Image (cartoon, rainbow, N blue to C red; front, side, top):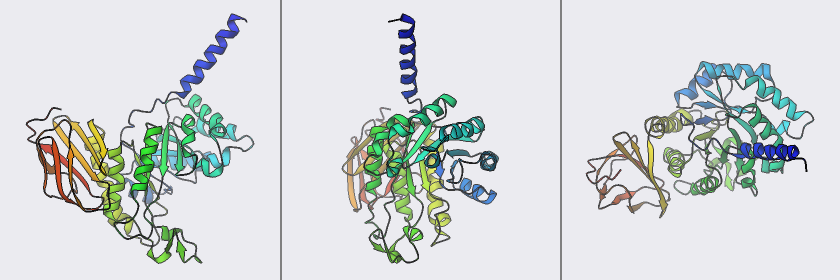
Length: 381
């Protein structure tokens, strides 16, 4: 066989292998908080930014370059990044779909507001396979090698089979339906996120930002197994758990579905209940996640525990991943003894570190605790 031919084949194989390397395993800075379905208006962009959102998404973009210029330019105006929906549902399988997507990408790839490409929404629900998305993923890697490519997945039969055509795995599951607090199955998202992190290093779970009641058809009296009138929004404790427990698991961002679905039925829920949690998450991301070093993480006994070092400060997070009120006693690594100073909206309760163990009295269902650890004389960080 001609040695030049062999060389070309080897180079082709090498180039394909290079495309497979996930160059986005390291954290994206600053920590992404992505809001789905934001309309391109000053009022909407200004509002989500006030909540701590730094990435905006729209299902309405991805097809019309001239129209979508407004969305990108408005994001730049408010110092936001775009989770750029490429409308894969309309491009993949369509005649000239690849060329049309390439033209769109070529136009926006150097826009300062571009954050990452959002290639497809729940492809397994459309009976697609990774092979169907392969040409589009390879085109994106060729045109924009440094821009991550995201795919969103529901908890479907084959959600895990798309690893080779994504850099960011976005997983969505919305557990708050009609069950009263604390009985919503929040641990379903925790389990889904755990599986996603076992598959992909860069994971962004989607947090419920709506009430299923708002998705009911006028003639429906029951949805998701509950009377429509019993369906509800996540309360503040549930929002806080869904966000911070995901961070404790090691996610690289959070997304929220969605701005347009936040109403009905309550026009005040987003600002009064959800926004304070988002602002707390943004503050923690800015103060700890974007500048600190993760020193230790553990998950056992329905507890998620993390320890970060930020210069000379130590932060400890513990989440009660249970719908039970209970006392918690967990072994720690790195710290033998220290005082716990509540951070953010953490409740000031009886919590101590002694002899390498943290003890918390009467943690409420799904409760999140964040402390700054002080006077840690035996700190081995």
